[in-house]
Length: 274
Image (cartoon, rainbow, N blue to C red):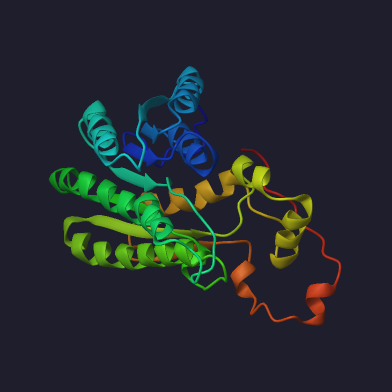
């Protein structure tokens, strides 16, 4: 394990959706910075493989099976994770899902499913850890919202509305729990080039994203993990109720069809390392 930064030395962190992508990047960085990490995911084999790799490096990572659509199972995974070390200092909610469709055509069941995947799962996790955090003197919670929660997108009302609700929930929780030294913040990622995303879009679609981003490229999961861990760490000790946008400058534009948008673009160099 690297000893360059140890912001989470002695801390216990729970990451929901920690088996791959952005969640795994958080688990990896937390472990390397000294945290004892509990990764919860329905993809338990992947979560265990990640834990084994990091433990061989000298980390302390445990994997727990939890499906946010199985409320009883998810609650048990959270309970088991908190029992692993007898406390929790950091909760990072990454688990969630998306769906597209016009409001006039989309079945209400899709909205219900995304409510359970994104909003209700975050609510369950927060309610699980807050009593323990109060007892041990505080903690930090990072909620996975999105730039989609800040703007409207045609065909994406179910996803965008849930992400918008999470920003408001973040603000409510920040006020309710501030007196207990519990900070609650939301991260609002833009396009992140995770394996899952790259597997679902074409090369042409990926280039469209790149053209829309000021840096000329999508983000890497490790870059998003750095932003999330800043919010979770004591470096952000006076930050609560905030939403941090990490989108490479995508929302810095009005998206108007100017001539600049048609010019050839060169991508900024990617961040090195993982």
